[in-house]
Length: 389
Figure 1 (cartoon, one colour):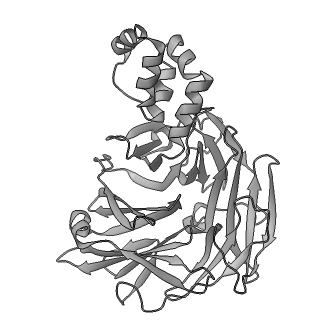
Figure 2 (cartoon, rainbow, N blue to C red; figure 1 turned 180 degrees about the vertical axis):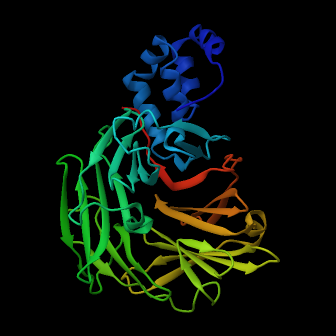
Figure 3 (cartoon, rainbow, N blue to C red; figure 1 turned 120 degrees about the vertical axis):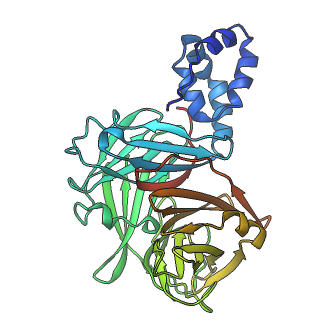
């Protein structure tokens, strides 16, 4: 994880401080900065590797939310950019060297999703998914699923989920849901066994579906088909079919996940059992973002229940014109985080908003410029729980 500033003079000065004071200073930093410091000197590495420091650092890092954006011109320039509300700048994470052992025939990759230290990338030509651990600097090929090799267009963000753990390990489960013979089926890859497991979902039949993971199979204008499962995948997954009554923020054409500004009135973004409805209006040459509502799957999974609308004062801050827009959405520990990425004449713009369900409060995280002009956006994802080994 790069930082272009010269840290040598500061490192010499820090080494003269008591170790306890140095630890307190390091703990005020975010994890990419700590990982970089570990490479500066042996004394820093020894201090950061101390069990007490690792435990305290990981305790703080577990609750830190990150937004990752993958942009590239060519595979040799592949860069992951990371931002957290604990900092005021983007962190640049080159991944080209990490991926060299995997032969992609000079092909560009797509960033699927992330959780903890694990990041998934997909290749369209060789139809391969790889897991990259950015802390241990390791790469793992994931064998083809029972459905066979898949191109990047087959992976739907709201239909897949990556779960890492237990804490302190590099284990993970990657799951996705698809229709097979018109029946929703859950596919689960376990990194421990290096194998896939297939589980056919059953109708929920009025059962409560709280404390589960939600993977969208079908997203329609009025009804969705969603598979709900436990994070451990140790119980039969169930099917819920939430319906949307009333149409949300407005009627008109609807797109799911990706909006072409000149034809779309509403953009629906799904994730973790929630749905964000984005309302736009026509401008002179482009569309303008005008309203956002958040909905969630009801307790019995029969309907989308209204949660909240972004206040008008906040909408004025994030209102912007665009030609193309897409979004991602996640829920963690009672906070729903959403990002909207828009493009107008080659210029990219990113919005990060969140809704705290217990406090019933919206928040806007201002983002500095990510310098994405003339780059391709090849994936965006939230993540939490990055930890030191």
